[in-house]
Structures are given as structure tokens and as C-alpha cells.
Length: 337
Image 1: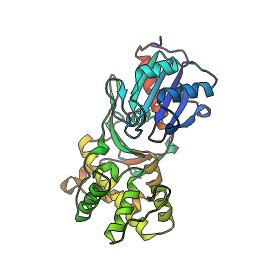
Image 2: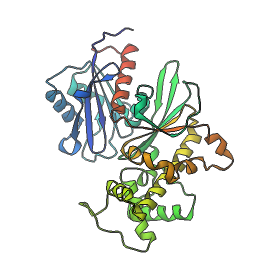
Image 3: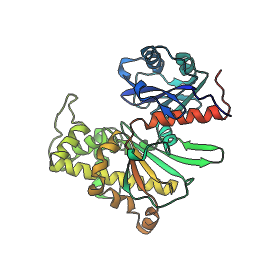
Image 4: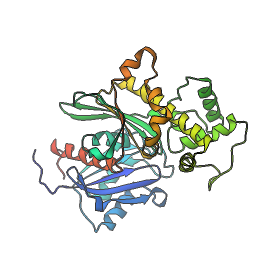
């Protein structure tokens, strides 16, 4: 099916704190149209999208896609990190935008849809990727407000990006220190999940745990009474030893978890880290022990050497992926009504 060149679509990336919305034509996201809205200031996704269309002067998109940080089931997603929003449903998207074709993706699915459409300059290599068949499986790991992963398969019928909720599995334990961290998380943060270490709050959690390791009470810092991961990164850059220890524990755990996921999915086409925390720690990963932890799988270490790792440094990747997904739907005959 050949589409008219000016087909206008609306794409949105719903994070735990903000929603970013933009207009797109084909695979091209209009950078000038990208707007950011605070989720706390809106009662639901419909209000955000109506506000965006009003701010843009009332365009009428033919299709709309929302990438959301939560499990998607039968066209419905309950947000993992936005307590006051009702579930996002396709009917609400259609009503808010007037679009004839609507879709909802998990945010990591959108990142997976973007692979191959991101400028090389916006990709940072962490572990060199061996040559592989372009249709080989790939893996996207999101390290941002939360943690998640999605496998990417290019099939004869098009691209398939499988959803998951990988951040909520138990933290892997290899050492006595890992066990103490898990016990501290269970007591102080409710449950020792991967996301409690590898996420926007995760680095701060590890930093706070180190006070317990050192026999000192957790400090009451910042507006919320707890230090933030951004503040830990500032202390890391300033050379603070405890911040360095926290970042090393974070990076090694990320390597361990990424290696586990690689053995599950066999992504010979590469592993891509996405999200704000991934971008923040990317310059430090090599010196903090990420690669050693990634490859530390005993007799299966040679297999791990087959998988390259990089970081997506394009903040618009989820928007591009949503646009790519819509383009695929329209090409397969999901005509706007």
C-alpha cells in the first residue's frame, strides 16, 4: 500500500513524570512540535493530548500512538509509576485526538521499534558489537524512571517487539554484599526488585544502603528527605568515594542483569540501553566494571562475547519508534477512518 506523503500522525511518550507529545509524518518526527507536559498537572492521557492539539493550533492527525511505561494488554495499559491516572485505553486516544487509527505500546516496545531509525551519532558503543545478520534478534533495556526490557525480532511479517515487565523480578544475588543489599531493600523499600537498583531511584537507593554498610544512619537529604540519583551523580563527578562505590555497585548489577537477559534472548543483533539513567552513567560504565560483570557467566562467558552493547542517546527514540509503528500499521492496510 502506498501512502500519501503528508500523512500526519501524533506520537506520545508517557514516562513516570512527564509526557512528551509530537507530530510526525512517516518516520520523521517534527522536532519543533515536541512538547513536554507534567503528568501531575493532568488527570489522564486524554487531557494531555487535547492540550497538545490546542497548543499546536488544532491539527487533525490520521493516526496516534502512545508509548507508556506499563504493561499493555488488549489495547489497555495501567501506568506503573502514575498513581492518579486511570488506565490508558484506545478509545480514549481516539476521542482525544480524532485519529482513525490508534495504538498503545509499552515504552520499551517503542524504543525497539526505533532501532534502525536512530542516527548513528546518537548511539554510544559500550562493548563492541560483532558483525551479525541485520535480521538477528536485538534487545532494548530501559534504565530510566523504571527498568524494563524488550526483545526485537525482524520477521517476514514485519518487526515484532515483545513486551515484558522485567524490572519487577527479584534482584540477582551473586555475593554476600548483594544479599545484604537485597535485605536492606526489602526492609526499607518494600521489595528487592531489579528496578529498586537499576532505575532513576536505584542509584540513590544503593547510595543510601552504603550508609548502612558503613554503620551510619541514612542521611535526611533533599526536598523529599532522601538524596536523588542526580545528586549522587554530582558527587561522583566531584570524586566522592561513597558515590563511586554506589556507581560501581550500580554498574556491576546492570552488567549482571544485562548478561542474564542476553542469555535469555540471545540478541546477536546487539543490546541497547535506553533511558535517562542509562545516558547518565554511560560515560562511566567501562571503568565501573560493567563489561566484566556482563561477561561473568562462567563457562558461558564466550557466548556473552557474541553480544555487543550500546546506549541510545536520542531522547526522541520512543517518539520515532511510535511513528515507525504507526507507519507499519498504515502500510498494512489499517486505513484511517
